[in-house]
Image (cartoon, rainbow, N blue to C red; front, side, top):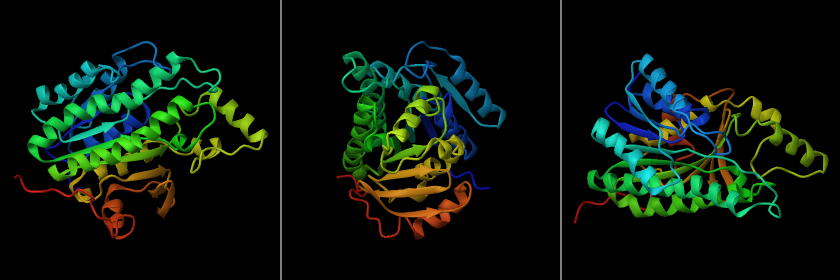
Length: 310
């Protein structure tokens, strides 16, 4: 199988567990050298540990790939700078940035504290900025790069997640603008709204909230899925789309947002999915390389295509 990312260097934030781990491994399998960033904290952002990032680095090395760990927090400008610097110091360049790190501090809006609001906004929305800005300095110089941001269907409205929803929908606007800022330099920026069973999405508290909402006849966020459906959707089913968006084949896809969960991938004409491709099981990267240009990406026009240097 072709190593489509051979010679590329990728940074994945929050890569010690769940979706980030699956993304880091999939990028490495395709030949990318990977900076595995993870603070190693709990799902609510407390604590820290080097173990999650270290374990993923060892997994990549066992697969024959190259990776280094980074333990900085995305929630500070210094942390973002250090994360990108880890790629430059260890591998000499950066080609791919996957902004994935996240936490939850769920609370009904009338009970939410300023601290709970600030922390979630810092990790998600500020975290995307703090990593993207220094990466784009290098992307602009080398006139190439791929940025994949992580939004959520919660951004379309989800009970008890005003902080998370605001951050995640802010990431969509951030994505569209970065796509236009950087497109002229050969850089693309896209976002995904992933649906998968992880430690953040299958907690006892969230399961209870789902049951309560169901009993009250309330519907989940538009495009979201039930707990039963979520339990069948693994983080590994998210990774092939991220690898595809990081590849040269996706050079004309810029400023777009994708829904993904299980075997379904959709592209948004905000706020609705305008078309989908569906199969039983997980799409492989080879299938996506073949199918997406003829379906989801058919007729797409890069709003800010690469331009020659002035």
